[in-house]
Image (cartoon, rainbow, N blue to C red; front, side, top):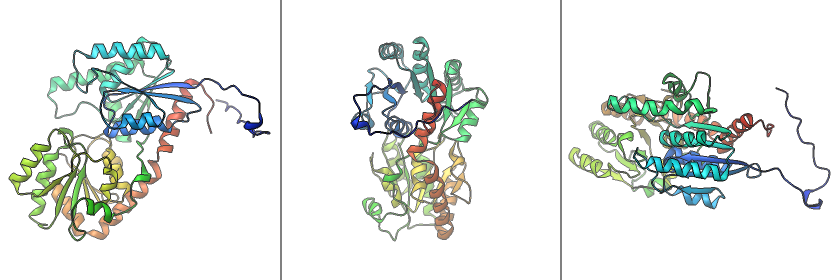
Length: 401
């Protein structure tokens, strides 16, 4: 395809010209189920990072969470749909109607969907409205081996259904893209990998003594921690059981969970039953900074598209142990940027954490290499440039570069 010629340099400052007209901006609607945590943070950075001279960006999703106000403050148009929930309910038909009304009224050029339920309802609404361009980002897959077979099959069918009216597919990691194709959620050769950016400027480059003090643990004590929502996906009880096993060989180690969630009380009970002294901070908006206070970061998830907390921990050069699930191995290379273990294996997790504590020089070197890898690739500007190119290709617009 012949490239459109680049614009020449202006011969007079714009401020000296008579009033000039501008082409209409491209209207983009992001549809997301939960506008918080990993996928929500990714969507926020995408929405605020696009060129406002070219794009008018909207976000619609489930009410609640702290990202809505941040989006509005950055000039993003937002719609929190009443009745839109994380789980499938009969009210979803009403949500679909509200999405259709919004898309028809605003006449979006691009509908960009995220997550399983947002992807299903958003793409179906876009189809009903004959939206010119429909893009879907896979931040993970909604079904997994630990689901009851009937439920797993139902979720697989729901994720497969809208692929026929999707113009472009994005995935946040190569292994996730592979799984998407193998599960027939997208046609072969159609998935573009766009790394999920994080706000690198807010993450310390290395160990942060101030973060350690806020976590309430002296710097002379080894601190092992995790960051994230305390729910089934993150397998927080496996973290507690890992801590109990590790104390047998490293009795002076301290443990912390940065986050909150529906399993928080169960986690506290399990820790008490196993004799583990565990600090649970509850939700912290500055979690990306606090992770720099850890000696070892652990991700115990049963499934994980990539893991925003994982990316942030590596950006802070934290030695890392992670479960080998979905896109995680794309970031954690054994012996190079961390250690991998099977999910639901607290004993193996304890062994890997213990190895890093016993080999501090190698652990620090892995952390530094993880930092180099993340900070070279996960800049918001890099992600937004890739998404901009995707939109331009589908719309037939000239390349911004």
